[in-house]
Length: 152
Image 1 (cartoon, rainbow, N blue to C red):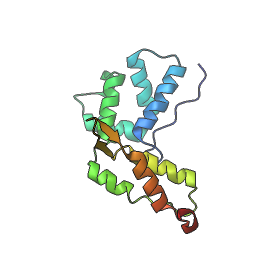
Image 2: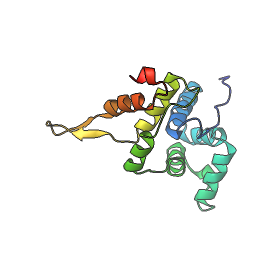
Image 3: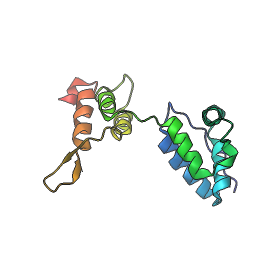
Image 4: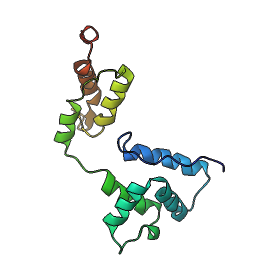
C-alpha cells in the first residue's frame, strides 16, 4: 500500500511502548504478516541511531538481520526501556509540575505518561491489588498546577 514511511522513534517525544503501538498499526495497515519482514521494517523505521546502538549492543555474534520481529522488539526494549525502580518512578511523578506555557491537557498527558511506572496500588479486603493511581493523579494534578486560583 501507499503509506508514507513510519516516523522514527524519538525518545524525547514518546515512550518506546507507544512507538511500538504506532508501528504495529503501521505494519497492519501495510498488510504485513511475515514476522521476518516486519522485523526488517522495524529496523528500517526505528531510525539510524537506535539501529546502530542495538547492533553495537548485540555485537557481531547476534546480527540484527537474523532476528524476527518478536526478538527484535525484546532486544530494543532491553536497550530503550531501562527498568527504573518504583520508588524512583514515584519520586519523578511527584516532581512533575505544570511548566510555563504548558496547557492543562499537556500537563495531564505528562502526568499520565509517568504514572504507569509508579505502581500505585493497595491490597484491598478482597485480597486483590487495587489501583489508587487516579488518587495520586488527581493530587499531583492539583499540586502541580501553576495557577493558584485554579488550584483552590
